[in-house]
Image (cartoon, rainbow, N blue to C red):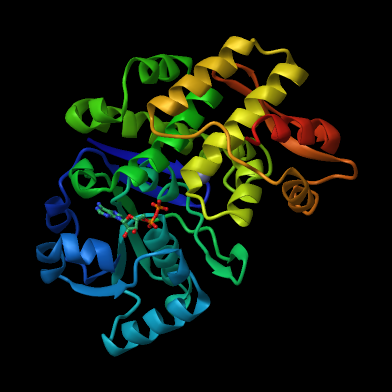
Amino acid sequence: MTNLVSFPSGDVTYYFNSPVSALENYYGSRDIILVTDSNIAAHYPQLLSNYKHLIIPAGEHSKTPATIQNLAERLITLQVSRKSMLVGIGGGVVTDITGFLASVYMRGIALGFIPTTLLGMVDASIGGKNGVNLGLHKNMLGTILQPEFILFDTAFLTTLPDEEWSNGFAEIVKYACLFDRALFEELEQHNVDFYKQNTAALAALVKTCADWKNKTVIADEHESGQRKLLNFGHTAAHAIENLYEISHGKAVAIGMMIAARLSEEINKTSPSITQRLAKMLHQYGLPTTYPIDVEKAMALLKMDKKRNNDSIDYILLEGLGNATITPLSFLTLEKAIASCAQ
Ligand code: ADP
Ligand code: ZN
């Protein structure tokens, strides 16, 4: 299925449920340079053999300005002109790097994405944000550039490690909590194995989540309002990720539990929502608690850019499928973090 989605800064063609081999049919006449990482290159060698390609070492440590410089120099060696198109095939690391590279190489060249992780398909490849890290400062250098296309081929997920499936599901659960009660109820009925075995259900799930992200970004591409909702579970998660070696999905799962507890206290949501969320997170291989050092976490949160004076803007639920941005005192936040710090 092909959809054209119009963002304020440009139109993106979405090829849902499309085999990667169709790239040739869609863009065969263009000079394409694939950008991917060492894991994808090892799993899918035949894919790369048909195209000029650049391979980066897999992992977050590749997300540096030095990688951008190195890749740009390799593009010059390959005599890549502004008429060419860079296509990032990989997880969030690859699409972030490729997006940034495409936005600065010769002041901008065409871009496409083929996400190969569940997280990439439902979140990272969508919305136009890209970036690299500067030391500990995540995504400190980056731009917003919408790709020309995103191609979704869930066949890539057959080689995805289990931990990466759970990472993707953390974001999927996030969309359900924020926007979509029916999706929450669907997820309650299933588990990761169900979606691994039912490709139609998996493809539909990816499309549902991509649509939610598209809708949110179209309304607020530069994150001045509604796009902030996508940070549900992420404020505490970023603090936890800074302190511990923990995957993004696990940190977000714990962050969503903290936010659900806060929603009970501030917005008087039913405790049953928190209980159902906890059960679902376990069902999808995700934790609900972690031995967080509350003092250290609070010290980090007090430096968060969403901070006001004695409070911080926090995404809370008003009900299942419905969320708000609420200023929260640090004392209230500290109590909620302590309740998940086991
Ligand atoms: P994310 O999409 O979670 O932001 P990464 O780009 O870091 O993150 O990808 C997560 C890991 O999964 C990386 O080690 C990457 O090389 C690997 N990976 C990505 N896609 C696949 C795939 N389809 N099969 C196997 N491994 C993959
Ligand atoms: Zn996230």
